[in-house]
Length: 272
Image (cartoon, rainbow, N blue to C red; front, side, top):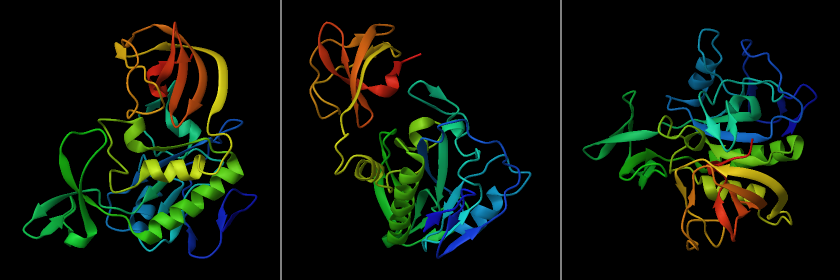
């Protein structure tokens, strides 16, 4: 699989579907992000053809079928309409920064007897379902699983996009539109997926961005001894509008300095 001069994929098991409604090019040095989605549709081909319709106010660069087949709708240098109303860190409108990858998956399922039903009425067997808690929710639900072919194909594609476009972030729709969207959901191994692609076996896991000033955006923000919720808090929470100096970034967390030094979630800082 490779990307040609027209920013289109070439290789086995790839189909191009025309999506003429998207024509605006990314600005210089973009895209630098990949957003992962699920289609919540009947199958990959029908979802791809639906997203390509002129009268549908949504689209994506890629749809990956459960067989691993890739449908490309939009060239990678053109903005697609996959993120909608979205925000992450100091950015809004993530369409302008990102490549959208849709995976053929029914999403949340409802248990009916010993089978599981999608919102569009299709039933799935128990071996196609997991019970899990979404990162933005507090109770377990039933979720349609992804296939090994999809996950492998997604990884291969993202590796190519990182190499070609210098991708710096991989995010889920659920992270840029929390409360509004829940894809790709807990059946997709998002944290392991992006950490393996962006950080494993790399020397730049701890990226120096020293000297940037930022302000805390929520009312209170825990400051921790390391980059993750598994690390203990080391002081009273930072308060809204408190200014910090950013020292390093790692795994979506930033090391900040006030009167002490610790780690906070990057998305809760305004670096304008």
